[in-house]
Amino acid sequence: MADNPLKSLASYSRFVAELLDRSTVLRSTVVVRSDSPYTGTAEGEVSFSNGFFLRMREELDFEAGLVTSYGYEVYQHGERLYWYDDFPHPNDRALASTFPHHKHVPPDIRHNRIPAPEISFSHPNLPVLIRDVEELIKA
Image (tube, rainbow, N blue to C red; front, side, top):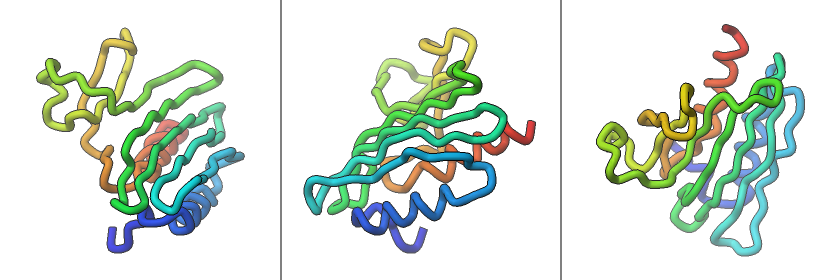
């Protein structure tokens, strides 16, 4: 990504608004806000067709241009399908390749974790999440 939208409240707000302006998004409550010029929070829900929705929360460091913490959950008709989080599991060798980023998937969604190679602290994750949901809609 040539220009990092995580460098300011204005640029990340614009990035999110433009990204969510698509035909598959029915409604969004995502807001990017800040109490300082250096940090911010992005949170809300994105409703898609076929009963899918994404619930997200990101802690942002605009000075460093990073997502410092996140949680992303995907639902269909109120049932949680999977989620991504950055809670470290250092003893789980299967997750070492993308530590601490991982995805919780069925069965036993709470304990069944897989690596999340496209999720990062150094770039926006929302494009990956939207692509995942749009692939589910197509299926």
